[in-house]
Length: 309
Length: 220
Image 1 (cartoon, rainbow over the protein chains, first blue to last red):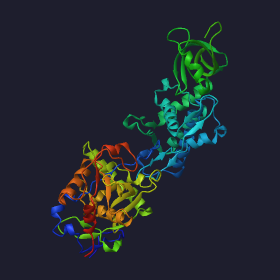
Image 2 (spheres, rainbow over the protein chains, first blue to last red; image 1 turned 120 degrees about the vertical axis):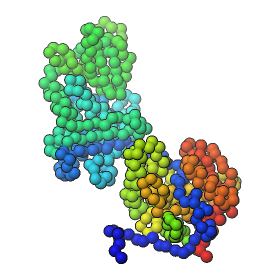
Image 3 (tube, chains in turn cyan, orange; image 1 turned 180 degrees about the horizontal axis):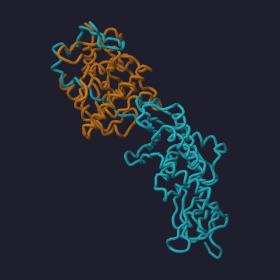
């Protein structure tokens, strides 16, 4: 008789033996036929995860190895910049990862899990141990979670409409993100990152969709960075907002509605915190557009002359 | 103790209910591949079915990441992992930890049943029919065998994972005249000292109850 089987599997071994309880028939024990799970789920510390989905163009069901390779290597490169920024704070001029400490790059290491067949979902996690930073200030601990948070923040900056894009990301990170455009030009319709931060459940970060519009906003931000005029002159104003996690601030100059956004390194964070709400003089690189300051990358802070602050 | 004195079997589902021999082996690369490639995929299919059917509550077993945590080592170095096979089909798995202090007999150690489950294909669901039944009784009997073999007198301790699991053990106890378990207790911490265990019902076999669970499978 022909078999319906197409794969060779071992047949179960049948026996006439029946356990004592079953000798009077199984019906009496029907309530025990299904076995529920017993026990407690182990506490496996979940690592931050970054699944990446690639959607091929025109409903294609395959991608070239070059595209797959580019997505992985570029994603790793963006994560390296994110790790650098998570450790040292946003540094808009930073481009050369060769100067980054090996430990900082270790924290960004993306491990790829076995592929799910039938899709271009690349399951990845950042499972490296925390990094202790002894920067001379108070010692800090930076985790892979911080790296993924920074990745999410710097990618999310470009999810906004073009006119609102104001990224503090390093120019190296911006260039790396822009490289994803190569994959879109070649054969992918979009690339989707779905960051997962353990413990946040459905409240976690939204998916980041990289499509042509996204890459155009990144390119525009890079051009604006290159075209803006920069000055080393300090500027004065009232420090109205500080985000000590992201390393960003707002300075009010002139009228109540005249704000200059900026970034600062972690090293001067403790100097800035007590000055919140005060008039300060910020030193660093100031970008101007039509003579108006549009951004400052702060390197030092002091109370203005004549202030007792 | 000689394993050949016993015949651990489950039953083909259906009217005939033929006995199928379950070969219990240690967790290995083959079972790891099965957990990831078959067990987990069936859980995903089951969960997706619920999503498509707009059924909000998915049974707890669908969320167990067996494929992830069967490889866990840190903090549970003494965990013994067993897998029951019917030919190339997995019947279920059993994780036990020896030398857990008895909650009913001072100075006595028992075998703690940390995890036990039938493979998804051996549960009735709206998506598929059960292949084999009574996997749990067979695995419990095997746990008693290991407890005896390792000098723990055949005694078992366990926490019921949820209401379904507790109902199962209560039915088992009732079917056997209430002699399988000591009275239920809560506030008992398992070997991993997880706070979640304190709220769960802890069950421990009596000596006659454990003996009967195993001896039912003795070859005649």
